[in-house]
Image (tube, rainbow, N blue to C red; front, side, top):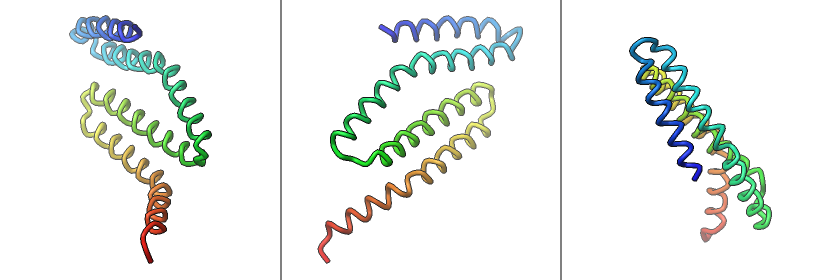
Length: 129
């Protein structure tokens, strides 16, 4: 039922933002950003639970934790870049939002290189010589 709380917060904030936008657009933007942060903070516990479960699964399978940590970093970058880009887009700055998304993609690609290398090595070992 947490989704009802999240939707309620979103709806109340939206109504307030619509009222504020006419008189004080900066306060409307700040309220939108604060609402996004509040919803994100509300979800941190859930994210922590997922991370713990995935770590336990990785440990029980014998997978090296360095790969799992890299995947977590990649997922974190994707979420943070998307969140930041949406806030900047709400402020009407589409070009900056696009740059944030580009930076997130480049950072993800940089982190993915070692994993891609391991995948290529594994495939090469499976192929006949």
